[in-house]
Every structure is written in C-alpha cells, then in structure tokens.
Image (cartoon, rainbow, N blue to C red; front, side):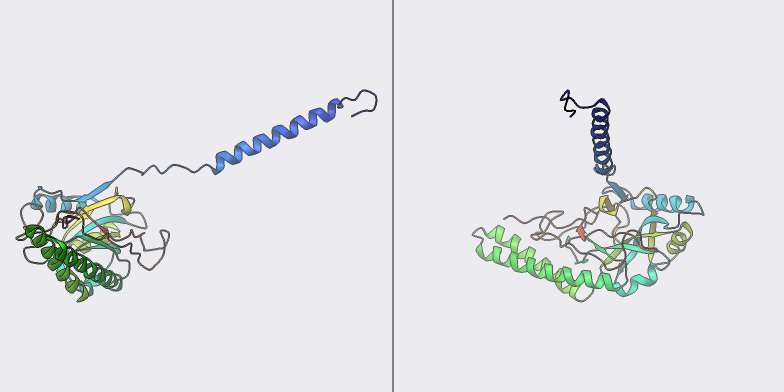
Length: 290
C-alpha cells in the first residue's frame, strides 16, 4: 500500500489478478490431464467357438472359411484364434501341436466317462511347463473339494442329499488324480499368430479347427466354447449318468493363476488371464447344495 492513500497500486493489483488466473488455469488443465480415461471395452464380451445346440460340422466349415479368408499380411503380433483339438492332449504334446503360434491359454477338462467335469482355462505361455503347473494346482484344489464334499455327506441327514455329496466327492477325487498324473485333458487353446502360421497349424492332424477371431482384444472379456473332441453332431454338455452338481461352479472357486513371462508388450507373447471356469459347451459341474 502507499502511505498516502492506503490503496494497492494499479499495476500491483493487475499483477495479482494475473497470477491467480494463471494458477487456476494450471490447476484446471492438470485436473483434466489426470482424469482417468474410461475403458471403452467395459461390458463388452467376445464369444468364440460353437454355441450350445449349434451344429458342429457347420461350425468347422465356417472356421475353415474364415481362416482361408484372412489376408496374407497380418499385424506383427498376429491374430487371435481358438484351436480345437481332435482328441484330448497331454501337456507334453502341446508344443508340437501349437508350434508357430504364441499360446495364450489352454482349455482343459478331465474326460471322466459319463461325468460332467469342470472346464478350466489355464494361462500357458510356456509349454508344457505352464500347463503342468496349472494341473498341479487344480489337483490340490480338487483334493480340497473332495474332502469338503465328504464332510458334507457325513453331516447330511437326507439320504438323497448325501448321495449327491458322495457323488461330488467321487468326481472331484477322480479329477484330482487325473490332473496329478498330468493327464491327456487339454482339448483347445487360444493362440495368436500370423494368418500363414494359423493355416499351417490348421493343417496338422491333431488340430480339429482353427477359428480366427481378429475382433478379439481382451482375453479377460472373452468366452470360448470349443467343441468337445468326442462330440460330432451338436454341441451340448456331455451326458452325465450319475448325480452331479450343476453347470458352472464347484464348491471352491477356481484359484487365480498367473503364467511366467513378459507383459502385454513382450514380443511373441500375449497377456494371460487368470485361470477361470468357463461356460464352454462341455459344461462344468453344478454347485452342490450348502
């Protein structure tokens, strides 16, 4: 202030106003820059495979046609595709079957005769090690599940309910034993490769179908429904000859599994989702009453 008037000089007041305006403008710009951008893929689900009730021969023909129509030149990372196997494959046979493509995950289930068993997607960047490790984890989970069902059976007063729990325990124990032995349980895989590499893969006898999915962007928002090797006409859950739990759940949630390797930016690799149960055509086992 000046001693004479007690007022701010005009030039000083103007400078103060400009400083305040600059601070506010900077804060507003920073807040806009720091605001997170919304994920445009939230809520979007990509489905690849044959829906339940559809013709498997028609699906195989459509997959062949789509694969043939892919342009010869693809992007460097390649195109995602769902590979269905002609038969169940043990971990040791996967590397040769899928050679030439980057593997993201492998779909497994234990083909117990006359039983619906849980379908699981295992992250699998390195073969056969990641699949063998995933099976070891599944064996431990199935052991715990079998023990849980036995405990429930012992405490069930209703004979029918007791039989349901006993059946659940038997199926879980069978799954545990198969996974512990690194069974021939893989029947599909999600891979990424150039169109030429995918066509080479499709020409192998053990590959039943290679279904390209160039629209696929996020595996964690993808549902895969490969046909079961034993099914030839219509995609459906396998016939269950005994009491089983219902589709999609077990008494214990699937563990979160991560595969070793690089992140989304690594050359020749693709991001892997956690191991999850899937609503694939084979059908999982239903949740037991609690």
